[in-house]
Image 1 (cartoon, helix red, strand yellow):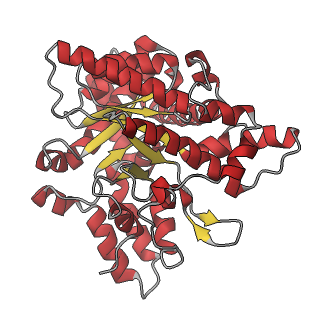
Image 2 (image 1 turned 30 degrees about the horizontal axis):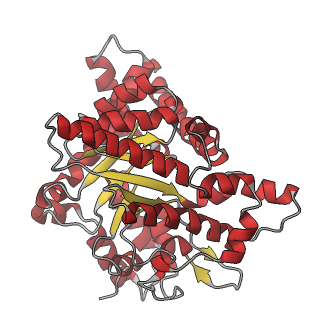
Length: 399
């Protein structure tokens, strides 16, 4: 049996979790596309790998799947709608007909909640089989409201109502962490998204701790509660200001050094959480398969953290990318999580204000979170995908 790269990664720590970063609704058609492109000598092994990661029939019958959870966001939700526009057109028309008082935005939100519920229901058997440890699906509040506490709380509660295995994704803004505390106090699982910096991670852990204290004091059931904190790896180094700040200062910054910086930020937050026995789990996303400075095929966003107790949420394109180069990647070092990042790279990166903001424990004030370059670039991209989905709903509603 040929193991998938991600299966090998999970073997480096029994608490490591591989998640699917898209709607479960698109997995069957994506799997068909991948297998259609498989080399002849790989087709059978790829079939086995993909079946082990997710097969709805097996999941329904046994409660078992290779993925331990699912994350979604506006661009990924748009993919599900684009995959079946005729089907979703009917769903939207039905929602509009059943709710004649709703405007386009209202119909869009009910459509999004329906999409979340469909995905959560699809993986619910894994949640039931594991007693709530696995099988959660993350639904995200509207990224157009990243600094609106009231709007995010209202939406977060409506997302959580879609199922007991639904986790609410909340952005890493000042207001977002206030929402995370409130949801945690009600026993609702959360996923901190649009987060990049150690300061954000510290604030998230503080919000979770405060929420848990309130929940316990109120006698809230926390037996199936979870918290994950997302590190958007390549978006930190590539979407923000590191390269621009380096160029202005005459600093030649290589891709390897950028990856060293991303590694340093996540490892600092991870080890702090572990040293303090914090219940939130770090989640790694926005990962890449690429060539390093020596021309070697790597995926450092998983290789540098092997042996750690992480969640890795993997979009379809990333999984396929790993499969195409599975024979080129080095074996995982189960002690990689304890390796120190390259000190020379960190010394160079510390000359950049936006790296110091990301790396230092007090690199940012809470009011600066939503102004950080990577945050703004990502929130803008997610908001654009949301507007596209709203426009699809508008076309259907308006005929």
